[in-house]
Amino acid sequence: MKSLVPFVGLILVFLLSQTETKRGTAVSSQGKDCTQIKALSPNASSGVYVIQPHGVKAPFKVYCEMRADGGWMVFQRRSGGEVSFHRKWAAYKNGFGNLTHDHWLGLKKVFIVTKHKTKKWTMRVDLSDHNGATAFAEYKNFKLRNGKEHFKLHVGKYTGNAGDAIRGANGEVDQNGYGFSTIDRDNDGCSPCIFGDIAQRECTFTEGGGWWYSRCGSAGLNGDWHPTGDHIGWGSGLHWRTWKFHGVHSLKTSRMMIKSV
Image (tube, rainbow, N blue to C red; front, side, top):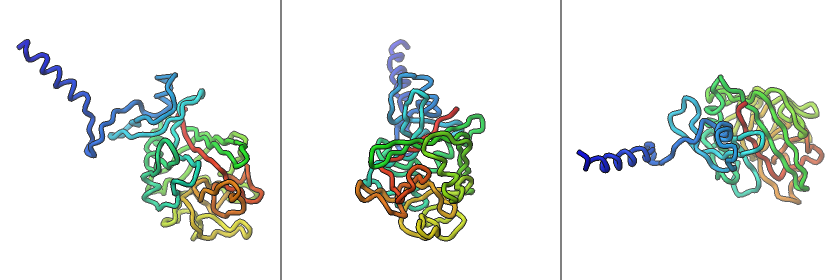
């Protein structure tokens, strides 16, 4: 019997080390969200982690930005033109890009993370322009509705120095409470309405990325990325018009992330 102990031990170690899913990916959860991971490991550094939100069977990878004020889950990052955000509904639902670089995590994952009723979420938007200036916007009580409701956006109280572009600038419409729209699915109250003709204040279909449009609006960070010197005057682009409105500036970088509170 004693001779079987080492053999049995090896079997147990092997079984415990295997977390294969049906897709063949070996992963193990490091926490329910980035906020919990930071709370359990205060010295944790920013990077890719595996989370398993409440009620979710299959864990998945996210990028956690570990700041002094907590662990934030990044769900959008723009810094250049290598990753195209000119994508259809399926891509925005499921996600695309590289977690350590430019990416969109996926509407479905963001909904899954934030749907649990015992937690409230704060969304932070970090922005920079082509002259090196930076700004941010934070929104309390961030959440998305489910896919049947087109992942409608809900944000609460705003703070920051970038302005509340989601609720509109210069008489533009409020995007809060609207569904997500892409080039192949219009959920924004006008048809079509992916980006706009800024001069005429009309919603016209051009090329660009998906967003929570409401007959266009002041915020839109998934449009075409424009380099320095070619970033002014575009109807499509990375816009946060409560901060950079004059000349229709397309921003250089954006980052959207959430944390539980």
